[in-house]
Length: 193
Image (cartoon, rainbow, N blue to C red; front, side, top):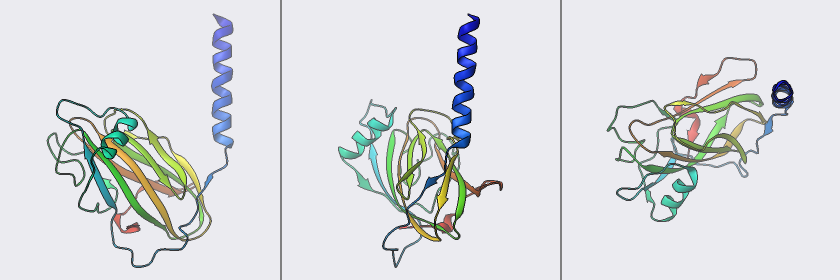
């Protein structure tokens, strides 16, 4: 038993050391930089059939493939935990909603940033070609693991998010901060489509 505990502690130490020493994910700016960007993010919704539930990202993808419909654009990624029965994002439906969110995020300056998302339920978020947020399952409004990213220059970066909400309440929010600074909720004005 003692050897198992020692091996587990050594493995955990290795994982923490590896994560702490990992280089930031290098984001690629949109090329060419988009012109005429409208505020917010475009979104397409899919809904589980009556009696079915979306529990995983693979099911969210499947629902979107089987019949997606365009929704009203999102104002950004500031959709705080709502009340049971309130619509998920701009979908008009409260439960078993999948969303494909697309657009851009504008970084004002180059540098290294930390990013995370608060989500209820699953998310697969990518910016500038890198996965920056991921949770494949169900949870109350809670954080994903913080990702450290390198932004090589100021400008627009492609944003692509797969999101789903299963039951009860929903939320989708994003925090960001320069490395070594406090992370803040991302303002809606930095998103465009």
